[in-house]
Image 1 (cartoon, helix red, strand yellow):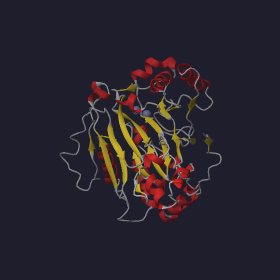
Image 2: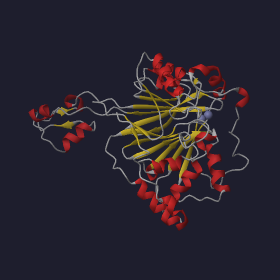
Image 3: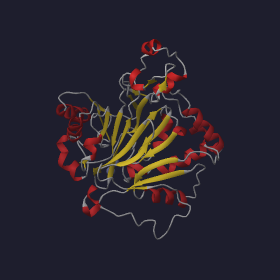
Length: 397
Ligand SMILES: [Zn+2]
Ligand SMILES: [Zn+2]
């Protein structure tokens, strides 16, 4: 595990001085800022870009964090100012391939149209470029399309919006707005493509992404407006090959080793079939990261089941335990709320974020928040997120 507080060591922002020189120069300067660190294979880390609630301040940005894996960056929430936070970090904005939005409150989405425009400035037209996938609650497609359309912004790269249809019980009845008819009267002819995803009632979750290596699902949370949590889970990797056994069987290192490791059986010279299970050690479990949006708690069984044994659980704690009633009334959590969920899930590490801006840096009460959560977790260490803090989740053996 490493905690890096990077603002002091992050590269200066030369682009500020170049703003008047035209878009081409700005784009070049952005690249120079973002190309700082090489990306090691199989690394998995998250970097907090904004850890404050409601609005950004110079001390705490509005909600945003980046999960970096295999050289790709996935952004979770995009509050106002996220793009400048990215510039101050060690991350490359151009590497963002997926964006996940927990809910439609402004402190989680106001940075998104601006970030997309800046990414476009940095890119060149390329019809073959894979679209940026954006996942979030129903209404997000309309918000994005209208923001870009009304500001005459044209992106040079494609994007798709995959909307999650919430259930009305994800927020107080008087707050629920049905956005399902938003685009019906006025179709979005050039609007972004994408899917509309409904809750799988059997699983109590939404399947967003699945490939050979990992699965990403969303689950429901209760907040002032429908909110979601996301869980990224790596699939188990094949165990190590028992090389000695292979050699004893007369199989020399080469392509056959790769075939066995990929799960295919091979036929030996003797005519016997060698199955992967005969020469592979136990599979290596993948890592699991859960990022929850604003909430006073989960809704349904999906969250608890999906977050079991999470290696890292990122949970909001807007106010301290002494203001529990106020927090709940506003659809938010306290450290105690977050820690109880972490305990139920047997999460290995809990990180608190989304702090009320009343807790300025060094605020005595801020440290009390950590204690409130640790008390529920029998002293297990709890981390308080700070802007630019990076947490690495090591590969399991
Ligand atoms: Zn918020
Ligand atoms: Zn909110």
